[in-house]
Image (cartoon, rainbow, N blue to C red; front, side, top):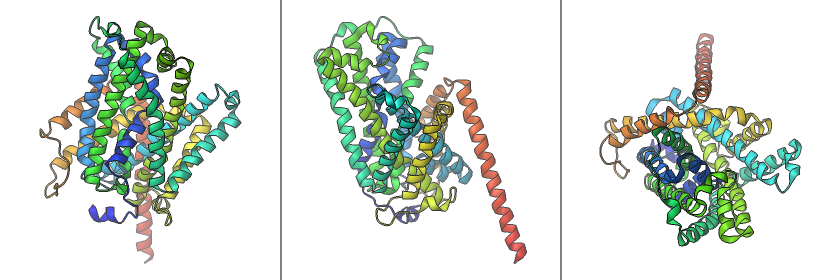
Length: 443
């Protein structure tokens, strides 16, 4: 696959630090400012146990990503790993589920979230027309930035990540300086049912960082940059989430579960007054924008890779000569996300995101196992998980645990979506074969 990687026409400018920052940016969104109250409402003072348990389970899956990303180093991330291991049918399903079933719906949900935040000080954004104009401005801006080059996109991501992390780290410093250990004392262990419900919430809070690997075709020394940047970023994310939960619990105690709309804003208010409250609200908006800016970059590469493998229209696989970016894929992804956001369809169809993401994770873990049995494969200079198949098998068990926590509507919606994609794939292949037969007959 190395020759194919050299022919993608993209500039390799993303290093370990770029992957690391993109992982942090994609995982630390506005959710980090809301989760403490949600988790405390179910787990009470034992909340930190859920973070640790879920963080360890999630790390098992990310270790599989680290191994396979060091071997398959082209654009596409999750899709590329599954397609390389299981062929074009699995590739088509994973490609569409990834960029559309995850990327488009998440983008649409985020711009709606931004509009909700802006509508508090500016009620005009509750009006559909002005809301749609805001969507257009936000999505167009992120598209233009990413069309102009991955380096420019990464610069924006680095600045935004720094801006949203400053108030987070200030909260951590002040919070641990004023730590109230009495509010952290556990009165008992949580039930298995509660732990399962909360772990699923946290799992999706940690998810998203792996999409930083979608730009594999633009990484410098991807066999090193991908696994190191991913693992450093995931470990840092889990530590930050754990720290925020402890600070919130320490500051608010049993009252934490009451402040479900903005728990960390209340914590900041306790420490710094109204200015602290406003800083966290601003950080929430910045956090959403940071992820929003990253999505056209990472998911357009999935479309780009799919087009290069003849799964999507060829025009999506073209590279813009001046900026060396998949401009057509970026613009198409952004346009579809805008349509879904304006239609409001994201609210109904987003039900498939969680189940789809878990199934993609299963595909990557299975691909990692299959690669282990691939003969005559050059593994020099690549990352390999120690312990044989212990980690991949444990990752499958962890994913099975999360899948059984899903609602039947999520599983049914995903099954129907994948079933529809399967029909499209086979009809498309039959059409190609028919066209081929007709050409031969005419000749």
